[in-house]
Image 1 (tube, rainbow, N blue to C red):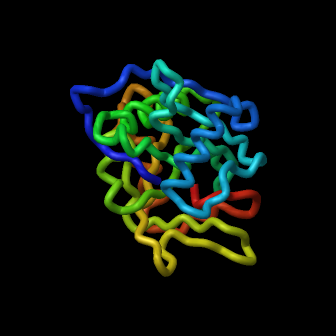
Image 2: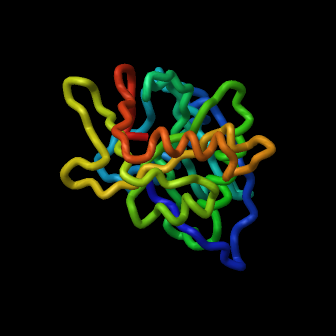
Image 3: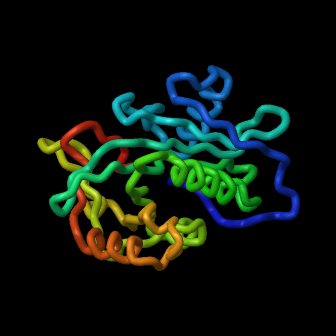
Length: 209
């Protein structure tokens, strides 16, 4: 994931657009693919349809995609419970517009959208370690010692694997209640997931979210 903090005085006028990934207009899809190819050379654009991917874009008045990300959805089993989970994936800001708050605005919009999804239990994803403060500032919580295990049961891919330096972050949506972000639901959720290995399979997974 690539994004960064900042709210420069010359941030472009933008609006947030959301689409089911399969319905993303071709002109916007081409821009997203180009941004992702620049950030992750050789990566295949798009996500597994079984994850119900939704594209969220920050678009300028002239139709330029300033930043993009994907929201992914699936059920996971952990600690004897089944959770309806969402993840952030492929978060990227156009290089020329970094440092102007574009990534922060888009991630904030994603967080609001996910908080409004009926029945969603948590948001769970990983990021490169230097980016963890950015996501914490956006309202997500680090899960110290937690490891996401993606890939497939036959070929697992973990965030603590060779060559990875990842942090796992989450938002427990029960924390949106009257007790606020430090309420009992948030504390219980963090306690249940911190320091554990969290399997995203069986079932489709993508890029460790």
